[in-house]
Image (cartoon, rainbow, N blue to C red):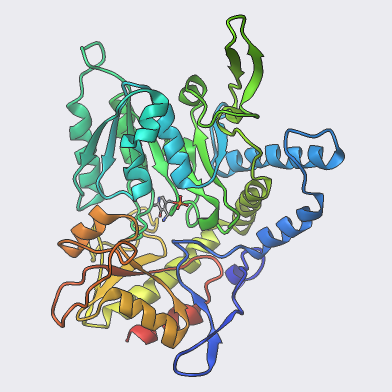
Length: 447
Ligand code: PMP
């Protein structure tokens, strides 16, 4: 299977785990949506660089210079991977959550934010956080949009919401930002990002794409989608070394207070005559990257970007769609299983243009089963690692489950009686390097 071979081979394929039933089995990592395994290529690149590790932007020595080059060249690699505009900035962060909190702290003080209630908490919550408000010096005006039941309805909902804004020249007209996910971390369904971006721009708003679940599965072109910013995490993109990206328009980033104050973000610091301190902050991405940066994390993201590009998303997508069909087909044969879908269980797996409509992320409930117990049994009896809960998207999962969901992370999940509604869900997710045997074992175990 060429897609499983280098350069998309992943680590951990041969890890064995004990079973409660006795014996052991190779671990089936089917929780890529939480954190994907490292690509072998990423691991090799990081190991190759490790002896040369040095401080970035801080030393005159050879290894410091080499590390600085590696760090700065990684920006170009990410810009290329995302097909950024020439004057976009690529800021390295810790994660998607960090990237969106950074953006929330740099939006103009009078910015109005539009976000669907279906978003992951990382894209739902930063806009009203007091941290971000404190940094930008204003409370946000956030409009939460109701869950749409089709992609077309999502576009219409945004259109209507933005149309209610004051028009240019009218009193109350100001900057606006739309935040939307590219692929749902719950249903795996793709959102109509290009159409939403067109609507946003037609109404003078900007748009940020949460590509945490999209970028590992699908090419993301800032220019083609015409989005203003993109955020993603390294650990979901096969680069698990604690780094993330916010890439896009430079102006709001350049005009705002630095995300963190400290060395690296400041160009010049001098005492004033009155005893205070004057700071001249960088206007480049460094403005928001104070402190010694995570060069290994950043380099590993660049390495993953290169590996995915070289392997070709066409290969990755074709293979993944085959696995998606296998899992969905298998689950459809089990009467007690209900697959969660916002845009409709029967929605086609390909759009009219032939593009897949979902990635390898599938959530479901099993009638009469508590999802946490089900997931625990998959692990203990079959060596299969999946996730259970509300997936940090509580409003969405509650909508899909039709009531009050409960996340085992926050409260003990009570037993569901046969015929009773589940209070949380099970999520299976996969991607590059997932062998057929893993998804076949999973479908067999569910059955
Ligand atoms: N957005 C989406 C759609 C996600 O799935 C996740 C992670 N589950 C995040 C944002 C947050 O990513 P991170 O935890 O790496 O910050």
